[in-house]
Length: 318
Image 1 (tube, rainbow, N blue to C red):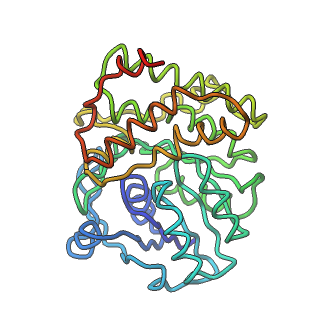
Image 2 (image 1 turned 30 degrees about the horizontal axis):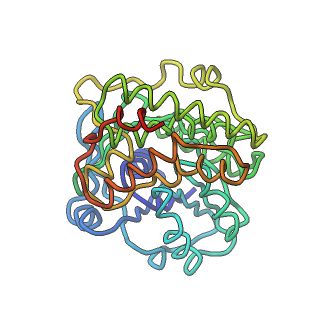
């Protein structure tokens, strides 16, 4: 396969770098200072075995891609950026292109399927950071990620087999899944802690807020009647595959990184906000996740410092 990694940040950059290193043709789609740095110096992959320069093609538009029948798009932007990415792909990519959603949340696949019949989902277990233009840091070594793949809304086919094989050849753990969204919904429940981690000072109150947000998420998904792998199944899949690098300080998740870079926005509306949306559709109250969304939105818009809010205040209000 030839890969267009649309969104070469923390997740996309690490995946693209490993695919490129294994010999798969890769084009990176990035923007701004990050794209300028990649074009000038290549993409720097900071991994457990050192720093690697990845000299892959890079652009900011799908209009620059030489599209072929064996091209696969790995959509790795943050969920709130999906609309702009899909608009670019709709304008320039062939209508039958295969798009694999390597995104957090569970909304990107539906939005993609509206435009592209050949839509796939990737459940991303990949600790990584991107805080410096031109540099992505893989948080685990020697296996950087677990990336299971399936067709959306369900099933597997020759494409899932090929993508999983290419990922494994790149040193990434990958299996095909007939119900990949059940795994992504479990990942969504886990990611309900992202807004808390990004916005609130660490401590017992923040831990309690995460617990309540995840319990609320479980109730909403149960009410929706959708498939969801159990927490135990998720732990078994992860096992001891992902080993944190001892040379790295713990940073934060994707939402924390958005606040740390002061981007002015975040994907919170597609994490805790997804539970709020589903709760409103089903008539299930979601006060905990609503509070997390409101706090994270306000902090992001104001470019406030990460982990600067008081979780106790939210707990008292609840």
